[in-house]
Image (cartoon, rainbow, N blue to C red):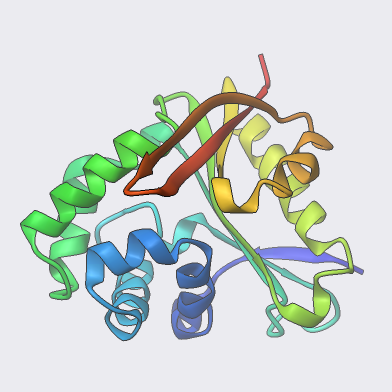
Length: 201
Protein backbone atom coordinates (compact mmCIF):
# COMPACT_ATOMS: atom_id res chain seq x y z
CA UNK A 1 0.00 0.00 0.00
CA UNK A 2 1.31 3.44 -0.94
CA UNK A 3 1.11 6.22 1.64
CA UNK A 4 2.34 9.81 1.99
CA UNK A 5 3.58 12.01 4.79
CA UNK A 6 5.54 15.21 5.30
CA UNK A 7 9.30 15.08 5.70
CA UNK A 8 10.51 15.01 9.28
CA UNK A 9 13.18 17.45 10.45
CA UNK A 10 15.87 14.82 10.96
CA UNK A 11 15.48 13.42 7.41
CA UNK A 12 16.95 16.38 5.54
CA UNK A 13 20.31 14.66 5.00
CA UNK A 14 18.57 11.71 3.29
CA UNK A 15 16.71 13.75 0.68
CA UNK A 16 19.17 16.63 0.07
CA UNK A 17 21.25 14.59 -2.45
CA UNK A 18 18.04 13.60 -4.27
CA UNK A 19 16.94 17.22 -4.62
CA UNK A 20 20.41 18.10 -5.87
CA UNK A 21 20.11 15.46 -8.62
CA UNK A 22 16.86 17.00 -9.90
CA UNK A 23 18.49 20.37 -10.76
CA UNK A 24 22.30 20.07 -10.70
CA UNK A 25 22.75 22.97 -13.13
CA UNK A 26 21.05 25.49 -10.82
CA UNK A 27 22.57 24.14 -7.61
CA UNK A 28 26.11 24.14 -9.01
CA UNK A 29 25.67 27.78 -10.08
CA UNK A 30 24.33 28.72 -6.64
CA UNK A 31 26.74 26.77 -4.45
CA UNK A 32 29.88 26.21 -6.62
CA UNK A 33 30.05 22.40 -6.35
CA UNK A 34 28.14 19.25 -5.41
CA UNK A 35 29.33 18.97 -1.81
CA UNK A 36 28.50 22.60 -1.02
CA UNK A 37 25.14 22.23 -2.78
CA UNK A 38 24.05 19.13 -0.87
CA UNK A 39 25.05 20.71 2.44
CA UNK A 40 23.22 23.92 1.53
CA UNK A 41 20.07 22.07 0.44
CA UNK A 42 20.01 20.27 3.79
CA UNK A 43 20.21 23.68 5.49
CA UNK A 44 17.44 25.06 3.27
CA UNK A 45 15.21 22.12 4.24
CA UNK A 46 15.87 22.78 7.94
CA UNK A 47 15.79 26.59 7.69
CA UNK A 48 13.64 28.83 9.86
CA UNK A 49 13.05 30.90 6.69
CA UNK A 50 10.41 29.38 4.42
CA UNK A 51 11.93 28.82 0.98
CA UNK A 52 11.18 26.62 -2.06
CA UNK A 53 13.04 23.64 -0.48
CA UNK A 54 11.62 24.01 3.03
CA UNK A 55 10.60 20.79 4.81
CA UNK A 56 6.94 21.82 4.89
CA UNK A 57 6.85 21.53 1.06
CA UNK A 58 8.41 18.05 0.89
CA UNK A 59 6.06 15.09 0.57
CA UNK A 60 7.45 11.61 1.19
CA UNK A 61 6.08 8.45 -0.40
CA UNK A 62 6.49 5.06 1.30
CA UNK A 63 4.84 1.65 1.21
CA UNK A 64 5.10 -0.52 4.33
CA UNK A 65 7.37 1.31 6.74
CA UNK A 66 6.83 5.09 7.15
CA UNK A 67 10.57 5.50 7.83
CA UNK A 68 11.53 4.01 4.43
CA UNK A 69 11.53 6.97 2.06
CA UNK A 70 11.10 5.71 -1.51
CA UNK A 71 10.59 9.07 -3.19
CA UNK A 72 9.74 12.72 -2.67
CA UNK A 73 8.07 15.68 -4.26
CA UNK A 74 8.79 19.31 -3.47
CA UNK A 75 5.76 21.47 -4.22
CA UNK A 76 4.19 24.68 -2.98
CA UNK A 77 1.70 27.43 -3.73
CA UNK A 78 3.19 30.65 -5.07
CA UNK A 79 1.94 32.76 -2.17
CA UNK A 80 3.69 30.46 0.34
CA UNK A 81 7.21 31.54 -0.69
CA UNK A 82 8.68 35.05 -0.60
CA UNK A 83 11.82 36.40 -2.23
CA UNK A 84 12.94 37.89 1.09
CA UNK A 85 12.69 34.64 3.06
CA UNK A 86 14.32 32.71 0.22
CA UNK A 87 17.21 35.19 0.09
CA UNK A 88 17.68 34.98 3.87
CA UNK A 89 17.60 31.17 3.79
CA UNK A 90 20.19 31.09 1.00
CA UNK A 91 22.50 33.53 2.81
CA UNK A 92 22.18 31.56 6.05
CA UNK A 93 23.73 28.53 4.35
CA UNK A 94 27.04 30.47 4.05
CA UNK A 95 27.63 28.47 0.86
CA UNK A 96 26.69 31.22 -1.61
CA UNK A 97 26.82 35.00 -2.00
CA UNK A 98 24.68 37.84 -3.31
CA UNK A 99 26.14 37.63 -6.84
CA UNK A 100 25.34 33.93 -7.14
CA UNK A 101 21.82 34.46 -5.77
CA UNK A 102 21.18 37.22 -8.34
CA UNK A 103 22.56 34.99 -11.11
CA UNK A 104 20.28 32.14 -9.98
CA UNK A 105 17.29 34.51 -10.00
CA UNK A 106 18.15 35.62 -13.55
CA UNK A 107 18.50 31.99 -14.66
CA UNK A 108 15.14 31.27 -13.04
CA UNK A 109 13.51 34.15 -14.95
CA UNK A 110 15.06 32.96 -18.21
CA UNK A 111 14.58 29.22 -17.90
CA UNK A 112 11.69 28.46 -15.53
CA UNK A 113 7.96 29.10 -15.30
CA UNK A 114 6.70 32.29 -13.72
CA UNK A 115 4.79 31.27 -10.57
CA UNK A 116 1.91 33.53 -9.62
CA UNK A 117 0.57 33.68 -6.08
CA UNK A 118 -2.39 31.42 -6.90
CA UNK A 119 -0.38 28.89 -8.91
CA UNK A 120 0.84 25.64 -7.43
CA UNK A 121 4.33 24.57 -8.46
CA UNK A 122 5.92 21.12 -8.56
CA UNK A 123 9.59 21.95 -8.24
CA UNK A 124 11.24 18.58 -7.73
CA UNK A 125 10.19 14.95 -8.09
CA UNK A 126 12.46 12.04 -7.23
CA UNK A 127 11.99 8.30 -6.80
CA UNK A 128 14.83 6.03 -5.66
CA UNK A 129 16.32 3.82 -8.37
CA UNK A 130 14.81 0.41 -7.70
CA UNK A 131 11.30 1.84 -7.25
CA UNK A 132 11.11 3.81 -10.50
CA UNK A 133 9.04 1.16 -12.27
CA UNK A 134 6.48 0.94 -9.42
CA UNK A 135 4.36 3.98 -10.43
CA UNK A 136 5.54 5.93 -7.39
CA UNK A 137 6.35 8.96 -9.55
CA UNK A 138 2.80 8.88 -10.90
CA UNK A 139 1.41 8.63 -7.39
CA UNK A 140 3.50 11.61 -6.27
CA UNK A 141 2.18 13.69 -9.18
CA UNK A 142 -1.40 12.74 -8.28
CA UNK A 143 -0.71 13.64 -4.63
CA UNK A 144 0.61 17.06 -5.73
CA UNK A 145 -2.52 17.59 -7.83
CA UNK A 146 -4.66 16.73 -4.81
CA UNK A 147 -2.75 19.23 -2.62
CA UNK A 148 -3.06 21.89 -5.34
CA UNK A 149 -6.85 21.43 -5.44
CA UNK A 150 -7.03 21.57 -1.63
CA UNK A 151 -5.07 24.84 -1.70
CA UNK A 152 -7.63 26.30 -4.15
CA UNK A 153 -4.94 26.99 -6.77
CA UNK A 154 -5.79 28.05 -10.31
CA UNK A 155 -3.08 26.07 -12.09
CA UNK A 156 -0.32 23.57 -11.42
CA UNK A 157 3.00 24.41 -13.06
CA UNK A 158 6.20 22.46 -13.53
CA UNK A 159 9.29 22.62 -15.68
CA UNK A 160 10.90 19.82 -17.68
CA UNK A 161 14.56 20.24 -18.56
CA UNK A 162 15.02 20.37 -22.33
CA UNK A 163 17.48 17.45 -22.05
CA UNK A 164 14.68 15.32 -20.52
CA UNK A 165 11.98 15.90 -23.11
CA UNK A 166 10.83 12.28 -22.70
CA UNK A 167 9.15 13.50 -19.49
CA UNK A 168 6.72 15.62 -21.53
CA UNK A 169 4.73 12.46 -22.35
CA UNK A 170 4.84 11.35 -18.70
CA UNK A 171 3.33 14.60 -17.42
CA UNK A 172 0.81 14.88 -20.25
CA UNK A 173 -0.89 11.76 -18.83
CA UNK A 174 -1.85 13.89 -15.82
CA UNK A 175 -3.39 16.73 -17.80
CA UNK A 176 -0.28 18.89 -18.19
CA UNK A 177 0.23 20.73 -21.46
CA UNK A 178 3.23 22.65 -22.71
CA UNK A 179 2.61 26.28 -21.87
CA UNK A 180 5.92 27.88 -22.85
CA UNK A 181 9.43 27.11 -23.98
CA UNK A 182 12.01 28.63 -21.65
CA UNK A 183 15.20 27.46 -23.27
CA UNK A 184 18.02 29.22 -25.06
CA UNK A 185 21.10 28.18 -26.96
CA UNK A 186 24.29 29.52 -25.42
CA UNK A 187 27.64 28.83 -27.09
CA UNK A 188 26.25 25.89 -29.02
CA UNK A 189 24.57 24.21 -26.04
CA UNK A 190 20.87 24.36 -25.17
CA UNK A 191 19.82 25.23 -21.61
CA UNK A 192 16.42 25.60 -20.05
CA UNK A 193 13.04 23.99 -19.69
CA UNK A 194 9.69 23.28 -21.21
CA UNK A 195 7.06 24.93 -19.03
CA UNK A 196 4.00 22.75 -18.42
CA UNK A 197 0.63 23.70 -16.98
CA UNK A 198 -2.41 21.82 -15.70
CA UNK A 199 -5.45 24.08 -15.36
CA UNK A 200 -7.58 23.50 -12.29
CA UNK A 201 -10.06 26.35 -12.83
